[in-house]
Amino acid sequence: MNESSLIEPPVIDVDALRRTYAGGFTAVNGISFSVARGEVFALLGTNGAGKTSTVELLEGLARPSGGTVRVLGSDPYSRRAAVRPRMGVMLQEGGFPSDLTVAETVRMCAGCTSGARPTDEALELVGLGKRSGVRVKQLSGGEKRRLDLALALLGRPEVLFLDEPTTGLDAEGRHDTWELIRLLRDDGTTVLLTTHYLEEAETLADRLAIMHQGRIEVTGTPAEVTAARPARIRFLLPAGVPAARLPLSLRAAAEGRRVEIRTRRLQRDLGELLRWAQESDVELEALDARSASLEEAFLEIAARSGSAEAVETTGTAGTVEVR
Amino acid sequence: MSAESTAASGAAGVGTTTFSGRLGALGRAEFTLLVRNRTALFAALFIPVAMIAAIKSSLGQIDLDRTGMNAVEAALSGGIGMVLIMAVYANLASAYTARREELVLKRLRTIEASDREILAGTALPAVALAFVQSAVVIAAGIAFLGIRAPRQPVVLVGGLLAGLVLLTALAAVTSAFTRTVESVQLTTMPLFMISIVGSGLFVPLEALPERIASLCELLPMTGVMTLIRAGWLGGAEGYDLMGAALSALVWTALAVFAVERWFRWEPRR
Image 1: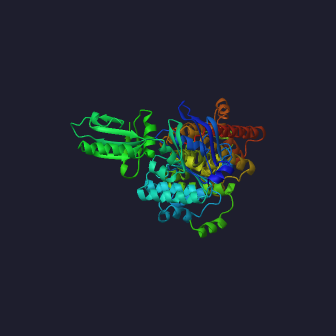
Image 2: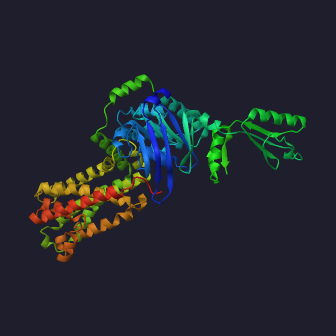
Image 3: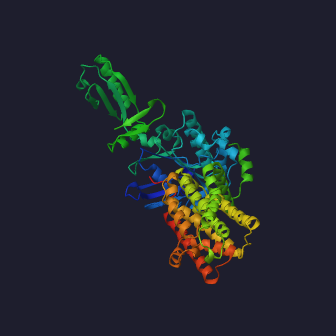
């Protein structure tokens, strides 16, 4: 992949891209990035960060207010007819006539898709084979997401745009979709996805960008993005033990009994903390030490605005509120 | 995603899509939706018929001498205008609005259909239905009501086709200014009313006072109606026909321009 990216021009190339809506609101404020063939690239961001506004420009649904977009070497807006047959698009929200059945919906789109897969194959791919006779309005939210994915994959696209592909899916459905995206990537499909599930970006993406207020704040591989962040130790001191008694070498921030230490040398500082606790016979409650994760990077960036926005993380972490 | 199925389907569907294939796929889906939408189907099929009866009975009180038509002829030819207004205009204004609200139009733009194909494909079943209805009205008039066969078939068909294109475009324009399917009844009302009264759907223009009639000739549907009536029943010729054709052409061009300028593919945010 890296070799080929040196030779081939990028499949997606974005330069100084801007999108300003009629009311004057700038949703995308001068972003640049490129995605090589066979790469999975994730756009992360809080709600309203500009992810969907960006993806719509890449899909050629709107004309940029400034900057350029090239997909497979062409402008997706002005040369829509040339680029369309080679791209697959999954919008953030449905877009199906509610009174058609699943199979009828696929057939409608297949008639407008070059080299479309047979309807059954497309539905089997996303596990909807048994639902083909059901009206779209009777599908669950997760099933609609799968139908949308089936339609995006209908024409075996070279580039795939997935806007929040797993929102509304249960854990199993999410893992099925991830598996499918990996298969496609192995076949050489280039994938650009947006998500606010950090785990999704961490496991799937070769590279990612974190957007905030219309700009890209950080970009790189998941490892590069997290490597730049400090690790974190948190615990509660027993009542009556002031934080001032902690060793000075630990740069601790205390708020009441709650203490947080941010460090780039997690092992050394944790060892020192535990030794001190042992020697001082102090019981640390709710001790939690962790390396920087994408979540940390994300929260740090999201917190810059000072606005409260919900960020969902999968797994045990549940929902994290950012303030 | 086995290798077999990939190879098999590759052989079956290698070709790129064609204009007629795309239009057919969109039209077929829209036809299914029309059949499943009982209200829309009823409005498109039966209201024009009911209106023909209403026109016929109300024309009993109007002096038609100047028009060269009897009440049955005026009612049936006006009925074709009703078909255009109900089955094409009102029906499509609500179909376009519904598809936009459901984000179907946005989705269709992410596949290979062009903007014009999306609008045309969506219009296909309604246009075909209106064409068949008009043919039935004419055939029934000739077979059962003793009306003469079309005098100038080319003018009749030309007028009908112009009417189908014009009212499809006007439906798209109207839908651009309509937020929800519920409000379509309201937004289609102005054209409905001025056409019924002013374009000769109810009362032939020739039966109106001269000054009012010449004003009414400027309305969107008047040219189309003049062509249809002249094509079927005779009457207008030469300059009158040219004027009507020109008016139909200008209105169609204006409507198509308005669609390109103002049509919305996504709901307002």
